[in-house]
Amino acid sequence: MDLFMAISLLFLCFIFFIYKSYLQKRNQNCYLLGYECYKASDDLKLDTETCGKLILRNKNLGSDQYKFLLRTMVNAGIGEETYGPRNVIDGTEETPNLSGSLSEVDDIVFGTLDKLFDNNGVSPSEIDILVITISMITSVPSLPARVINRYKMRDDVKVFNLSGMGCSASVIAVDLVHHLFKTYMNSFAVIVSSESLIPNWYRGNERSMMLPNILFRLGGCSLLLTNKSSMKHKSLMKLKLSVRFHGAASDEAYQSCTRVEDSQGYCGFSLSKSLPQAAAKAVTMNFRVLLPKTLPLRELVRYATVSFLHSKTNNNKGKTPSLNMKSGFQHFCIHPGGRAVIDAMGRSLGLNEYDLEPTRMALHRFGNTSAAGIWYVLSYMEAKKRLKKGDRILMISLGAGFKCNNCVWEVMKDATDDVNVWKDCIGRYPVKSTANTSFLEKYSWVNELEPQPNKKIEKIKN
Image (cartoon, rainbow, N blue to C red):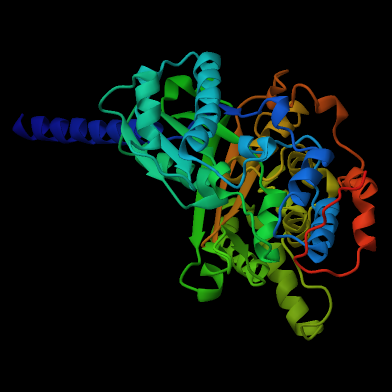
């Protein structure tokens, strides 16, 4: 009898352990319930005329800089409807202030969060984890404190303020929430990603620091995630895997994208010539971890076999074998950092124009919106009804450091009729060409100027 009781007790303990492990594993999933991208008002659009006036009123520029900016603007892949900071539109970029900077952040953060809570039927008081990723501005109290105060959130909400993470910050935040979900069961998490442009608009004449003014635009997003299994049927996507790589140990990678002052004391982002190499290495190192875990075994075996035969028969000459990324993923959300970034990623991953279309169109319509950029790409896919239940999406984000942070999502349901932030323009996309020909037509006379470095042109030609 005693032996029977002992065996029964052990059996019950075993069942309890298995059941507890099952519950823990089930509640460690990370579901995306919804997200909202920010779209500014039309009076903040940086069209050709506004951009031209902005460039020509900079007293530090001369004909050489004008020619560089004209060439870059035409070929950057940026369209006529991107949004700029209020002080740039109003012509006060020389004198940025804290109140204007905080007002810009409030519009993005509160605008997207209001819609996020309303559209998903979740109250701010239900939020257990709050992550803010806005790199280039600091306030006291902190930005998360502004959110908590605005929505009167609970006093036990877990708060994280990620700063200086750049364009890959939102994927870092997703990875952070995923790990937190392993500790905090049955929780809701909110992530807000954006960038502060008002205090960071470059007003000097260094070419390496002028490029961000052309690429970076006003934008942001808010995400709602949960690990509640009861919310699975309402979710848009399920996180399958996230992989992060940080290459700051390398001096070249660390210095490839930095915020510095130029010789005149103007602060801005400097993009060095080592940036492409740093980015390529970061992507390669990330994929070494990610791809073996996500691509099917048959593709990995095929690649290993072809690579071995290539090394033996061609003596390492000719076209290098590559992995078929489409064997593991149906969609690719690539950071819309610029046309050169998109082209390079497309070549290295073996993607065609259909695969790159969402990223190119997000860059054309909204510009480089930093950490929020990949969510504008995802929203384009939704608006075009590309996403089907069971599809897998690879999100690739790049950022200063140099970092490459990627994650893999599984689509939980077919795309709906919600065209989100693309509502007013999705019918016009995709465009045939992303070149800004209107800018070239209006300011082609710049190419006829005699070289006059740093000498201001007084008259604006029509």
